[in-house]
Length: 223
Image 1 (cartoon, rainbow, N blue to C red):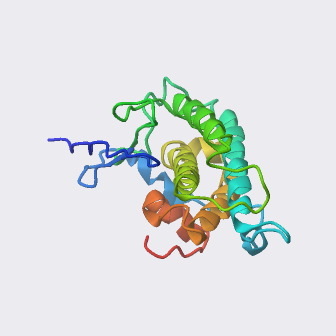
Image 2 (image 1 turned 180 degrees about the vertical axis):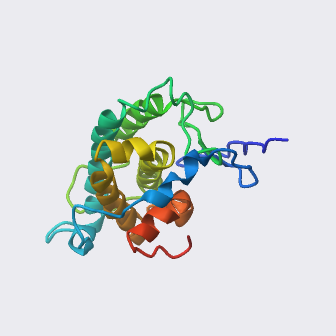
């Protein structure tokens, strides 16, 4: 019997359950073993300067700017990868057979499953609307952010990372064939380390990428 998707527990200022993890799924294809071929090559080696706010910028402003930058960079990466990741090849957004991603926002009654391209469009639209809400994100420097703003930022980081998970797990051969590995490796390490450092997401969001971090000799406690 397939596992049941958790019911939405959406409350004001929160986002409900949008991932189904099938840990007892038996994998019958070798496609998902290709992460063992990750070389770990990256465009930069020292990420530490990228993980701290520039002088004169508050941490809150830094997290907002970084969230926008992360989503924009992943969008550009996905546009390149859309040559081999289409609604025909990937009608449902996932990170292999064990991790299924659903979309939920204030307009949905229950989480819905979309293709990666549909999900990305929803995420970009939702993120722009939320970040443009001055009641949640005041347009003043060094403004304090409330609980709702924290939830929005965490959701952007977490859901943006899902695209890297999908591309690694479902399309890594194409990533290598098109010489995209250094770019995606660099993007992954930069923003995952940043998000983990400032509690914008937890390790369960990237647990399926343990072989990637191992290849790059980057220790992520908990995976």
